[in-house]
Image (cartoon, rainbow, N blue to C red):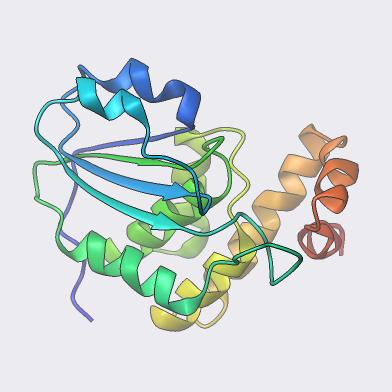
Length: 188
């Protein structure tokens, strides 16, 4: 598998933050939106940029009206990563900038640096977006596709455990959102 070209600047954010990045020279955007969500109007204020939009819900599996991330979505994210320009400013966003977008950026880091330890990549992601809670389903697919042998998933599980220590209220919130498997794994 070919490594992702290096990117000089990374931004991860949510929909409400997009307008604040329009003048920052963003060259590439990966939008991870819920099905049916319109294209964000904020991009009209951005200069020339390459944008890929994928649509699936931030969930761990099928459910009533939910479209979960699938292996082909992760493959599309990795394909997007292989097309990045070496001097790019990459912006990855989802609804809140916490789960789908951080999972996507982590897998792009892992693709770009196949020899880097998973925990170091997760630490970089956490430093970039402190409240990060990468989607475990997406990371599981990326782990398999990148041949990481579960190491990305384990590093993300450890980040989830850390986030629950810092924000214990997340456990109940995430369980209510059908993400209890992530909480259970983090608490194990």
